[in-house]
Length: 59
Image 1 (tube, helix red, strand yellow):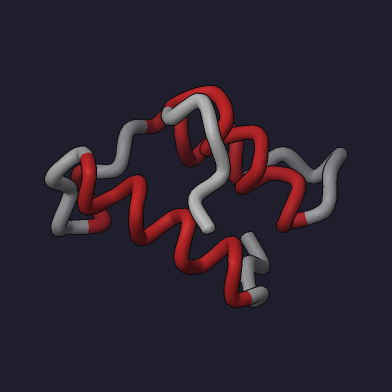
Image 2 (image 1 turned 90 degrees about the horizontal axis):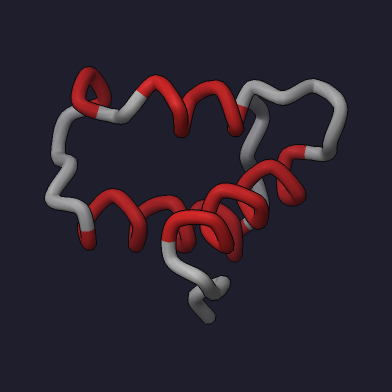
C-alpha cells in the first residue's frame, strides 16, 4: 500500500472513523485486500473501497 495523496488519506480516515475503527488491527481483511490490489494505482484502490463502502468519495 502506497497511499500518499491528501484526498485518499482523508477518505480512508473518514471511513475508519465512520466505522469506529481506531486500531489498525481492527481494519477488515476485505478492506486490506482492496487496498493491496496491485492492478490499480493507490488512489484508485482507495476510490474503489470508499465507493463500495460509503457510496461516495468524501471531499
